Length: 415
Image (cartoon, rainbow, N blue to C red; front, side, top):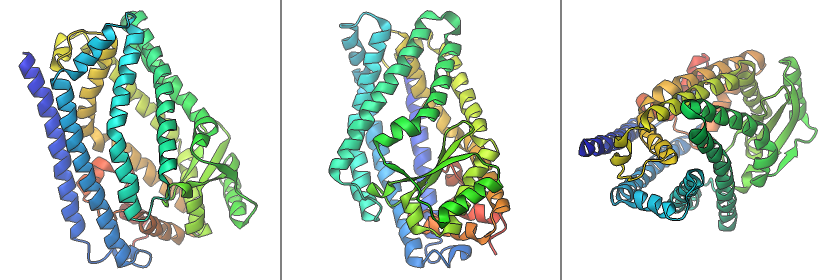
């Protein structure tokens, strides 16, 4: 039975890997068909040279992602099936008797090893690929600082949440999974409230948008849509990247709008208003709340599945683990579910795509310069080197947002 379980997991892992590889190749071939000209609707804002560069950017990231996946897979299998994960667990067994603290030590140790393994890939992605295509603005010293701060922050948050989950797994009996889910739910709510005020300033500076024509237009839009806008802030994105974005912070009644300085520098005021209207649309259509309910439903199902599966000795033997424990059960089920859920991306992504289409429609209805949405999408593609012609199947698996061409067509702006 044990060899069968190992073979089943390895097969699941390899099927996921080769499926991802197939989708990557499918997407690259599809892009190549459109390399001679951008889609007609974007020709005015997406020069052929930038369109072809966007294809090269996508191909470069695809190749890099494949190499990353292969190396990670080899290291993972070598670590697990040489007994490395079991040896690490036995090491902590020899020094820490309390199961909760032993679980924290094991989880943090595993997280640190994964972090170290990912450092070279993060460096290459930032200073080779992003640099090559003109996006990276960060220096090595700044990158090192971000990595160090991010690691410490991740370890602290992980310790707090994991301790609470392990505590309930150990002491709450058969309904521990309900308490563990409550921990995650409350943590997500707290993080949404505190992220902008406590965490984000560790990485970027936020300054109020000065009195200007743009600020007046944003406030006018907020008043028109009866939106509780508390403040408009500008984030210094240019210290790291040339990519552009905007978002609202806060789950309560008052919202803070955050604009990347790159967005202000590269886009017209009417296009920025279209971005703001889109974000207001998410709030007005209760997308944040709906997404929270959806994701928390997944977490609840996950914890209940852990409750059902962690008692099986075959779970531990599949990964060559000698000692069953609450923390190991949680980690191993997480690994298996991570592979299973990757095949469900099109299903979970349907909700995200629906939200984006709805937010686009809301923006289209409330702004005066309707054509600004089309030029916005085109310039977003041009500035960010977005792939305008992804294969539909690839997009369904990997895109959290619908392709820009689909969004223009949905609004009837493709003429």
